[in-house]
Length: 163
Image (cartoon, rainbow, N blue to C red; front, side):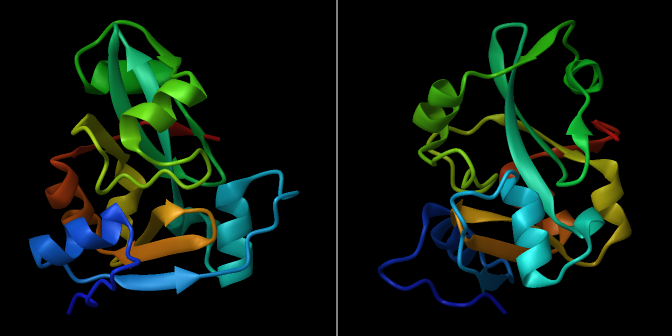
């Protein structure tokens, strides 16, 4: 059952609540000196790195695309381009990513973005009943089923991560 969003909820929690999707909230004290936001979340929350996912934006042939991959891995840009029928992908400029999603880098949630973007979730997420993604700010993650994540984002699953 979805937890009701408080007036201070993020766009991600509001979107999940409005969609009737079950999710859990996980807050932690973010360390600004942490070298990796995603790995920090997994470690502080005591979760397996393979089950915690980071949200990255890439420019695929001139269009922004969201790639969601395990925090310990990297986004395979070529695989992401192939997954959306494109030819070439580059990481999006962080300022463009923030402006387009409405979130800050390190807190970009795949859910509740200002603009709906094509979204691809690494297929390894489907191995788990629950995956964890940013809740829309640093120090805040959401747990939900990968199927619900795909449904709420209109996303697809594909092999887009590499070590």
